[in-house]
Length: 217
Image (tube, rainbow, N blue to C red; front, side, top):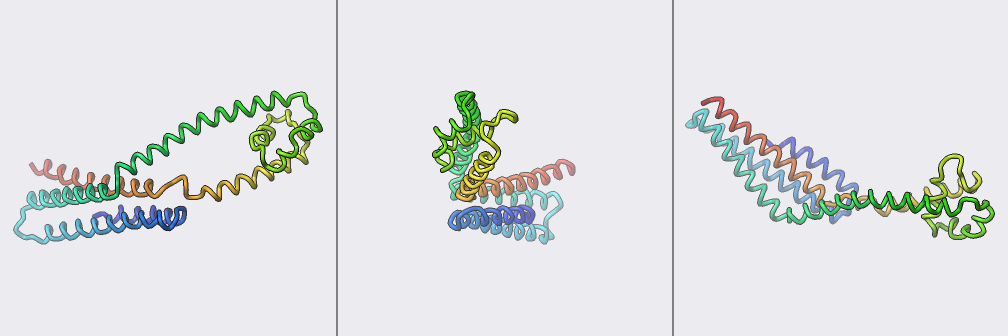
């Protein structure tokens, strides 16, 4: 009854194995295996209920709901052993960094504009004489970005030098992205997604049985 959840969980695992370290991905593997065991448990319980000739339609529905609720309790146990509350705090902390980044982006913009204001009126030769070494060896990223982000028509350097700086910036970003690959999303995020899928499906199945009982009354 949890085949769709298991299918989606395996897709999440596949992405985790591509982006996370082997050790982190192994944590996701454990949760996927646990969900598979939970799915097998529920399938066996439902099959046993459906094959019981002594149960009425109403009793069969009640038994299915009881089995689903038991699966829900097993899911809560899985969450507990996976330090679920710690994973939520970790995820919330990561989300808060997104908002912090928004503030950081604003500060970055203001700093870049301040730098351009200070450079205004200086010739290209003066800029290169004063900042050329740190600019072209990649040690002054803020200045580099400020110059490259100058509004059209207000470029501070000639096109050949801007091309060099763009290449330098691109190489810098490529190295940063490579180092950060798989770090932004942790194993905890993948595990939380899998638990959420399982919880949502169990809730749907339980509500379905409750709704069926009301219809029969």
